[in-house]
Length: 416
Image (cartoon, helix red, strand yellow):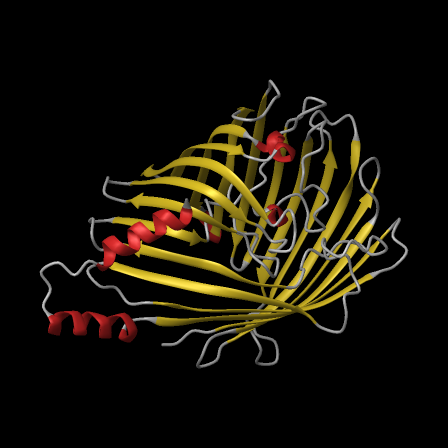
């Protein structure tokens, strides 16, 4: 169905009604002249030690993302990019496809695949954008829909999106998805999910300093083994930021949502999600204290399977699926950018601590420490970023002890 819709849009976009030959030639030149190349390269070494596994994982991988975005003709353009993920020095890890359970999982299997291919119309309807095709979708903080950008193979969707800012202080979006292309790659049975997904999102900024974003997300999966993820979620996200005396800045991020069974889900439930994250900023420092809770009823739990889950509940990824008894995450975070030291500035530091339990706090799951350092170097053709991250999860009544170390070098083309 995606192919049919895409072909129809291409045909409609390229019909040269009433356009003279010289004009068409100028338009074709603009497609190339105003276009830009896409190049995003990332090398990573990921080391994982996990109790219960006889070997330690050592995953050395490279990802090259390359593509092109055209210039606009009558407000219509197109873009594509492909991902090539390669293992360097042997597969000494469970890549989710090789089935080597002696090692911990590092979900970066080798792959070569189309990542994005879409048409975009952002100059035909005032203050509005229409996008059709395989595309990256990130809603707000990526808690409900994201691209899982941390992994080498990102998540994209065969989707139709319409966004408009035509109303004062209001942004509206409708999203239809029919296939999710996941991080596990084409060779994995979990690499592609067929679904019918409808999303409606509104963002209102007229209550300053509040930004309020109500949303509806309806997901219905075709496969029986994904039926538990067929859900209807109704929620609202809130963000605020205000300057205080003494150079302080107060900010808040939070939200709540209700999730019900939907479509092919054979369950009968209604579950809740809550998040509150107040914080203070001073100079380059930012301190956050937060709580996030996803309910569970012992059988079904509040789930966000299309989210960028790596961003939430600790970066060791122990809670990619919410436990049946739910999840409560009490956490604190700190981050800063260091002043120049020996002529070198822009070094970023972050740290976090998480304490995990079931949704009523009666079962202690475990706790986790996360730390990291990153530095970007500007070049004439785009930034080069170096980063080191380490995370240590200590299990009590959920999963097993695990620690992870990441060494990453990234480069993204930027042509002025």
